Image 1 (tube, helix red, strand yellow):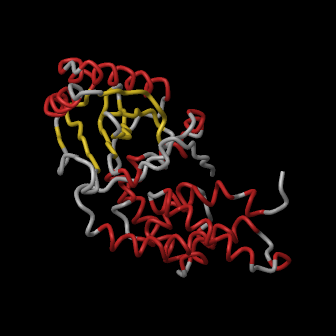
Image 2 (cartoon, helix red, strand yellow; image 1 turned 90 degrees about the vertical axis):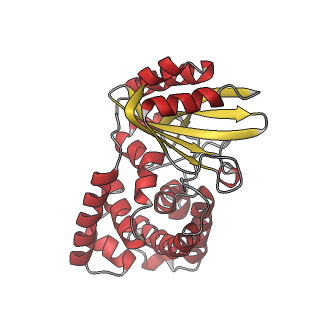
Length: 287
């Protein structure tokens, strides 16, 4: 164990920053900026180190998020979060796994910076409104209203998701088997009728420019992809949810899915190589 609160809470700080930014690289930068500010603080004057550190990381993440928002307006094609390789036990904390999922982070991207910060801190990390107000520079009453609007916004947009891990894994296993063989009918059977595929190539890797909707259209698209030379799949856990990795030659793709009622409702395919740097490094997420 360590007596340094920053070291003790580093995983928490990274998780807060990643939830706000959707980028592991930017989250790491924000955590380092938080450390630099923490290093200059008179520790004897800090009564609640955890709250103090969360406040610093939130402010730094907000600054970074505002600049990222402008860059993402010029992003080529669909934007998806940077996937994190996680251990299956993350799913034991059902609420954390759902909130750090690619599906949820994609929805959070539709919030404004302040709304996202308030939602993440209150809904995911159960931070009191008074502490959030200090972090974002608003009154507690204003933060409460922002939080209410953000929750309604997210609830209306989040995809249907099943929280039972064994059922998720069973659906993904069935889906992966159908993808690997290119069996269209088997794919249709495991896909929800209104399933959506979203792919992010960032203008660097080949990716469908717009979402593909509907079980049969998605099944045909995936079956054709499976016929590519050197097409290899293997199951992994991304962002606390069952998923898989596709390798076609030396080009990797991280695939995360949302499952509901035993069927795949969303398929998120991240192909932008700039977002795949964490594919082989397990991330530690914590509330």
